[in-house]
Length: 352
Image (cartoon, rainbow, N blue to C red; front, side, top):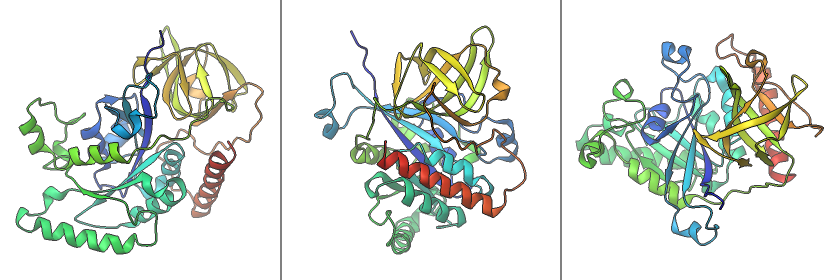
């Protein structure tokens, strides 16, 4: 008997630095990957997100999907892609944009549109359809309750004018507080309380956001029969087991015992096992985030890049080196990066 598998939807969490993106992810998430919630030492030291983070939460299928999905799909899993907000990390942000189905644009309601907010709007225009974007007005708890309603209404009116000529023009705006009291007291994974009243007092608007996601979600286009292409974002060894490659299936299907090629190393490796957020799986299709274990692979030689089935020819652009902190890239290189990613997104959308 085939085990059930959730419908996976990848959501990009984007916005200006310090708008509360990671706090929002912490509150929503129930399962964390090995690269979640600023686990990197340098992220913790600097207090900002420096690399892509991945986590997830699951919910029941909304009624509009139950009638069109098979009985093998029994739940809805949202994979949250926590993207950096700092200007110098724009290439990492674009890397996250290539794998998303929906986008949450996080805006600090006390500051409004900021520099990187505008950059994220451009990325949203490239990657998403109008029905796949949601705007979150975060940190509403910092506004005095006596004037909160009028302040929120004023900000929404201003943002409506800003978004008038973008795909965000009809996007719902949801006011939330990912953690009442701010980032410094936010606990990893959100509230641990089982008391609904206590949980509600620690966040504002999260239930509304989740329900909005459920009602707006669509079945993404997935092609299980296409050529397999896997975007590697992290790699680490496990003593006595092998090396784990984590990432997202960009096209095709992965199965245990399949042989994949690491293009940058020109080597072929067989998949020993796979997990999806710590749950063993036998296969993964386009859009799924998985960790695959392979043998006899030096993790230190792996850069962020692509894995594929052996002998499938494709153009490899290996721009995402696994270096989190360094000198700020020249502006021209960021333009080249954006143009190449736009081309990649176009090809995936129209040719695969």
